[in-house]
Image (tube, rainbow, N blue to C red; front, side, top):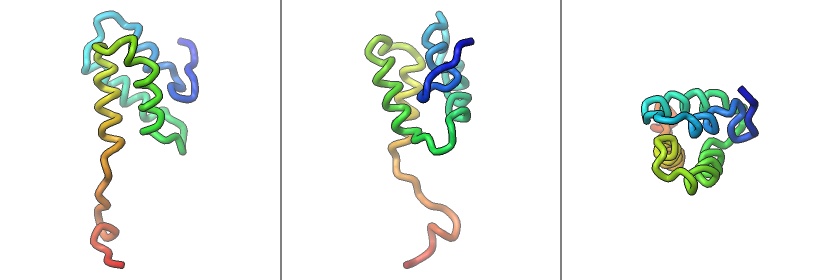
Length: 90
């Protein structure tokens, strides 16, 4: 398997688009592996935007496009701080 680039270090996303008949479940599994393989400090939201831009136009109905868009939607949502930091008053 050839190496990827900064957005897809292991080439996982690229390879998912090349697999005929891949389903959404397999794409989610590949997505999780992709997310875990990102280098420290890599902005996930920016990487997902770039990957959607790279692949979605040519493969709008591919299950990986759907998974990437769902991941991007989650990355853009504000997060609630839990624990004592969420209850702390300034």
